[in-house]
Length: 84
Image (cartoon, rainbow, N blue to C red; front, side):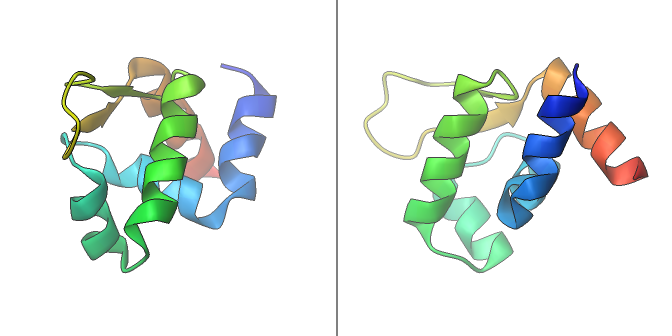
C-alpha cells in the first residue's frame, strides 16, 4: 500500500464510497441504488478499482450483473483512508 493509492481513492468522492461499500459482494446496480448515483458511473469506478487491484470481479465471464468485492489491498487502503 502506498500513499499515492490512498490519495487516489480520496480524490474521488464516489471512489471512496464505492470502496467502503464493497464489504460484501455487490453489483453496480446494487451500489448505484445504495449510493444513489448512476449505474454507469459506478461501473466505471468498479473497473478502475479492479484495474488497480483494490477490488476484484467475482464472475468476470458474466455479461451482466457482475459481482465485485474489495481485495485485501482495498481493505487496507479503505481503512487508512477512513482513519484520516
